[in-house]
Image (cartoon, rainbow, N blue to C red; front, side, top):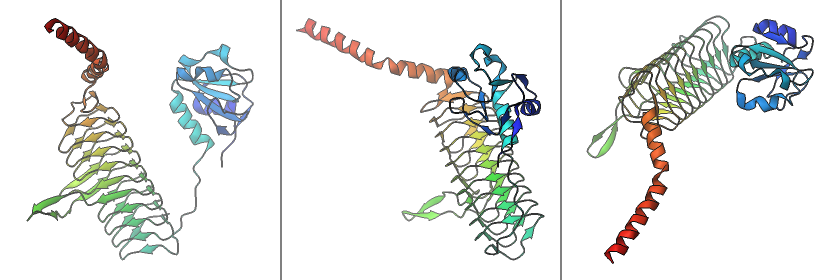
Length: 346
């Protein structure tokens, strides 16, 4: 259930400069164009300035460089901040506090031999926890989850409904794993024997470090022999595939439908746009940025931005795209030249 604050209380919590009346109540967050009298809205990009003049919001969180006071409707307060996105995040946390439910283990949950449970652990209906599993303090396991033998889940981590951890997977503290994610899956490894594909046993582990978030229906393979590792603070979107023996650094952002092939190393602070594909055994340097839809076929140096298919350095990619746009005109000119040459020969 959402909380209710006065505009003045919200400004104080956000350390924002208040322009307008402090006494109006706000209890929800909404976009500028749909906000009503008890909503707080936000403005972080100049393209949305036209909506400011017609908003019905009680208050608007706005970056200082976008504050155009003459466009603010009468009765709407402004909360001036340095970073509107950060202030919005804090506002959502204040108005929509996380609902705390009492820890409980459902009667239909199944716990294997030697399971170790910390304090205040919750396990949902029809979940299966294998032998020798360790769940830290405050771990929450949703309904119909499967946690394989020998897994470890750190304190405060939250496994949503229908998450599956294959045996010996390690999940750090304060992680969030969304519904349908499969962690520690067998890698895609085969060898030809007598013209048939023989499966290579996948005996490594999958390790997820602290404060990682993994989106719905994402699959992360275990190591074939060593380990697959996702670094602390990394955030992974829905429908991502991470193959065996991939090593991902700290504080990376990996957007939906990315595919990372086996034994690739991703440095710290890397950002991969949606539908990026990376072939095996590559190295992506610290702080690199890869644009959506790029196909990466070679190593990327640290802190470079690459785009396109095949992916190349940003400047090269933009030049290639510009040249491609000129092809119709170049083709027309070539046809004209060929026609003139044919006349001369005739």
